[in-house]
Image (cartoon, rainbow, N blue to C red; front, top):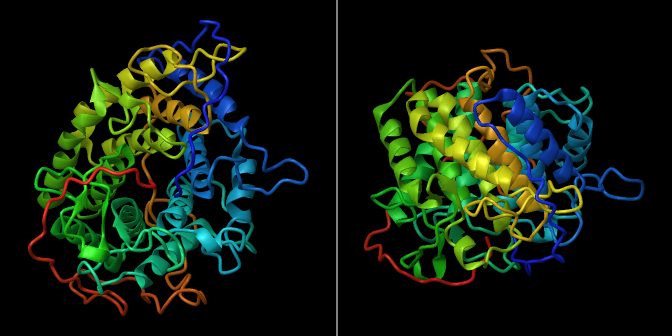
Length: 454
């Protein structure tokens, strides 16, 4: 992801209509989600003649388009509305790249690990929800997620900080020396979900290693706060202690997958409970907020979308780790109601703002604002009794997506990746390419607050 100057459009007329959300009603939530989804997709023109499928217009970076299509898959899976499915499929397949790994030529020069990760997680969600499979001559959802995971595994770097993924893939990009929680979180999240989906223990071993590395470095502290990252120029001894919703969400959701995969391992249960408790900082009177930037009005274009992913991962966690439901459900219900009230801008009175705590439109509009509101409203369906729970499938519970454990390993721009053969028993050693990490001693908890790219 890249920093961009936040574009604050001219304030739109506020009609006061708003979107009324009854969090106890499936029909109300689906109707509200439909309205917000339409508003979100109105920003997308990649399916227009002469435009590039999968890309959003400026100022939105490539990664956020991947996040948007992931959000739209989640929207379909909860509401059953397939209006946008063909557009989503076209976009995902157009951006896969020549090696079928979400490294398209038009993005490769400045693509980061987290950027690639969001497209990989979109493909993973498509596999888990049995989103319509691509034609047989096209890359398949599961194989795409595996390709991204394998390439990330090949980039695991123990030369500094005892391991970890760098934020950037290529040395010439700003941020190459930064090892951050979101890049490693994408890797962790994919590993945990692939372990659950395929039953292959090597993915789970990777997930454990990534979590342990994050903890050893101090990016996950003893109270389960998850911090932004650290520079390898000082061996990751000074932590940037900014906290973002999507970091909490991506590790919470990954841990929930590991809890489910291990059939209730108490270590993963404790980690889930810890991250969820630490996530209290992201709620004001049970209404979600991006606390690092929202209260001071400094959220950039990227950060305006983080609440969308956090909402979705909270909702999915309740299904994979049901003991979290009683904590998460009220938060999503309250946030959905407040988000709907904040969708009262524009000529229709349903354009969504970003700040929900005031329950009114804040005068801003954009992809991030619209997507975050959709994520909250759509995710609140998990706490409505008449709404059917969306349980992510696996290859043994009805999943139809075809995988390829060796996908991505022949990519010319990465080193030798981990090769896996399924099934791998838990007692077996990790496959080739699985690198152990050295615990970095003497970690110093820094308190550097700086304007960093997210």
